Length: 320
Ligand code: NAP
Image (tube, helix red, strand yellow):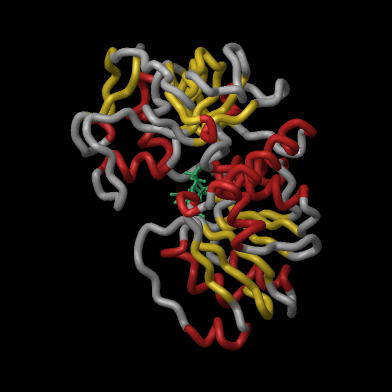
């Protein structure tokens, strides 16, 4: 099969298309024929070699994909060949024509959801779900600011928060992104590139403030986030690419919480519950991943550049 292989850590050019054997599913494993693979920022950090968790070289990147079950190993009763599925984690990598998975990494994909959309679920939707509901403890009626709402996680968070009956605000850096954030259910949208956008949010939030902020770029925004929060407000740090200085008094006066989250820490039972709830939302149409761009597998280096660029408008996927 064709797969992207990384022989050494480095810039996007180390992502090379290669021919490798199709893996065989052992007991408890599922082989998925992938029709799309999701590109997440974390895969660029891993590829660069600067991430805490490093795979053994050579490796095929990617955890998210969607397609059909090709074969199952012994003791697999959950799936059969032909089932439409998405992957949230793999054993062999998802930037490939086939991916080997353990049963808990595979989830049924409702008919109404395309394979490209299915490849946008594993990391982004599970992250948004856990950040919003478990770590952020956002409740219906509360105001949720998705700080960085135009990307994979942000769009998912907007859809989830809207479906839960929250007052949803989002930010994006481009007109296209802001339009998309509104279309996906946000009540209000702000331009995180505008000089006065924090004032606009403060004005909109009034005396009460914002109950929950989902933060994609904490190194840029955390100090300001704390000044926007309501009494007992929560900031969930989902993404950060550097250090930041904060004023602890902003937390004290609001009895506010800064909560970190990493999808990798999700206990297996909670992860199963998240994917069961995603299936319901995907089936009834409240959740519908937005695809920004599709590229052939060979363009993985370009896709890694694109996912780190500003101007997000949904999810970038690779088509094997
Ligand atoms: P993405 O699709 O590339 O989206 C990035 C988002 O950040 C876009 O909405 C972008 O908006 C926004 N952004 C850029 N500059 C910003 C600023 N100054 N203030 C606020 N937002 C800004 O990436 P993603 O997949 O959604 O992931 C978002 C972040 O979460 C990444 O850092 C990723 O590594 C992290 N993440 C963490 C976990 C976890 O487990 N903790 C899981 C998944 C992702 P514009 O392009 O419109 O400017």
